[in-house]
Image (cartoon, rainbow, N blue to C red; front, side, top):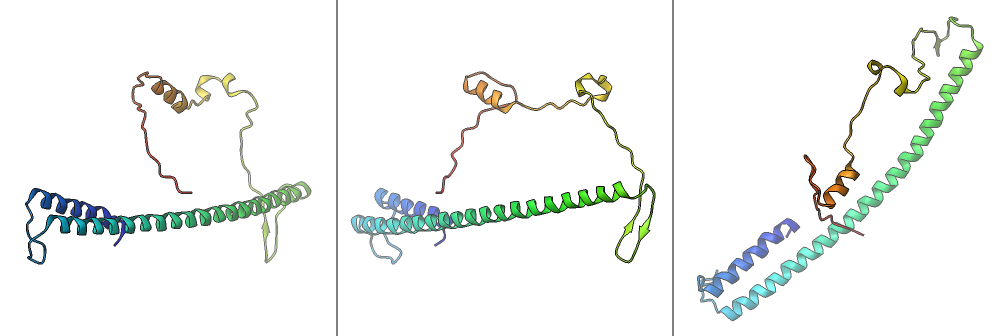
Length: 174
């Protein structure tokens, strides 16, 4: 039985209990008369088996989650190690490119079978002043919701248009 099959199976057992107790069910699946005490004992055992199976499956899935969490952490660590190596290689490229630019005359073109050294023209803006001191047409504004302030206001009972406090139950696996 799969974990998702346990809830319908439990619901079916409770339905059978209800049918037996109300007298709607007087015969078993084998066609013999149903004794309420015997049937309820059988259903109680079946319910216990299903719940044990559900609990075992849930704990197996929790162990699987812990395993994937550990794997994700190991991959994250490896990613960070590779990212540091990438950054070091990029800094070396930048440093060596600057080195070439410092010691070669502007516009000198060199090439061989492995590489070509060339030059290109580019433009950039050097804005050294505070952006708040620039004229308004040269400023950009960004508006964001202050989620911390909204949460505090909602918890204090204040209404905030377009926002609501959601209470969630989050599963914890340790």
